[in-house]
Image 1 (cartoon, rainbow, N blue to C red):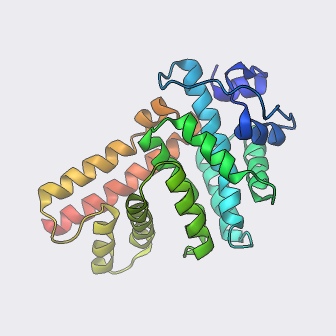
Image 2 (cartoon, rainbow, N blue to C red; image 1 turned 60 degrees about the vertical axis):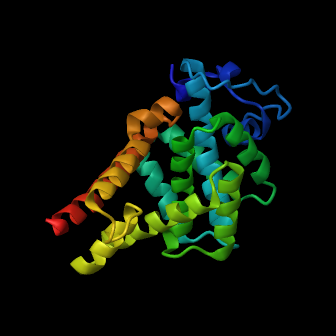
Length: 260
């Protein structure tokens, strides 16, 4: 039984307590005891451990998307559309979609325990860097949905990245790559698209071709759907990871074509 089957089946023995459990319980209409013992996750992801991390990821993603969207004082139509786009990419069943929307609404509440949720999510992920990077990319996309990142949203996201052990310099590069990806996809002139394609891979026009290939392979490995699922990405989110790899591949191939 996967993580969702256990949630709807009421098999909560594998689930976490604490803030994440309370947020999920509130979204489901079942208020778990936030003082419930937190079962240690020692990093060896058997079936139960994987389901636990998948549940934590799903809960944290949608509630933090709501929190980030509200960080600048208002939730825009673009930010709501982005959340809906993520749900569509995941091809959520009606009951899953209802839960995702409820989690998003939880994150918008003034009493949302943001710091506690992030800290528990960090413990659940146990330094699984690629999984944390995917999480940051999804919630960062919320802030970029308006075409720009509000300073208040940037401060919140930087604090999230820091709590999750993701260095500031790495997060700056992540935002640069994501912004460049948007401009690459929407660019019109080949010169502009080439300029942004280099940024998508985190390289420059002066980077040797062999090093560009290395950067490309590294990004593809970081976003490989099967690898991410094995680390705790919900199966429903594999399409998001797949699209990431397709975007990276598109930028890489554009560069290679221009280099002959």
